[in-house]
Image 1 (cartoon, rainbow, N blue to C red):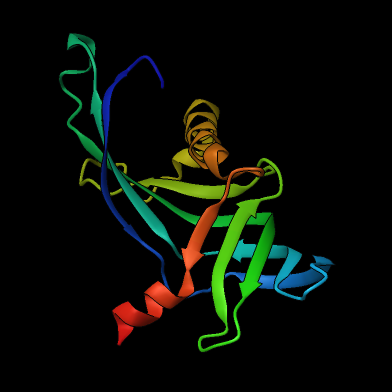
Image 2 (cartoon, rainbow, N blue to C red):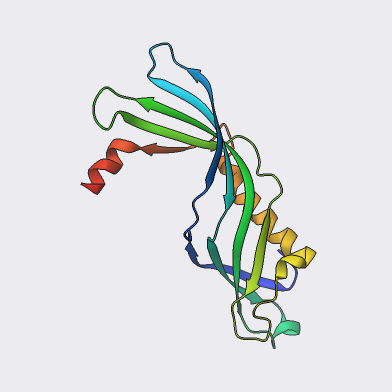
Length: 164
């Protein structure tokens, strides 16, 4: 993190109204008994999602600068996902879906705007290389644990029971 930052805390996260766009699906392999299908999915993300972070400055040099809330939004990225889907013979016909990033996230764009009423509201901090680099590296680092062979497993029957 930049030298002038003492503390970063999560404020809130919203997904927005724009879903990711599936640009292509390639079936890589299907098990002999047809119980598991392996796919690669190309996804385009142009989201209205918004992540709010509270940033506290460090040292007495910055004591006049109040804690600032940064809005990270307008994410524009291309992702490749590896997905495996395990089928079962009874409803809901899918037991598990495993999802991972095929590789590290490539370059992406975003907007970084202060939300606090300190005279900087509306300024895109993403145009400041140090801040933009720090935020992007933090996002890539946090997504690293989801790059193959790591994955997120979604238990579809368990979700169905919760929604009943």
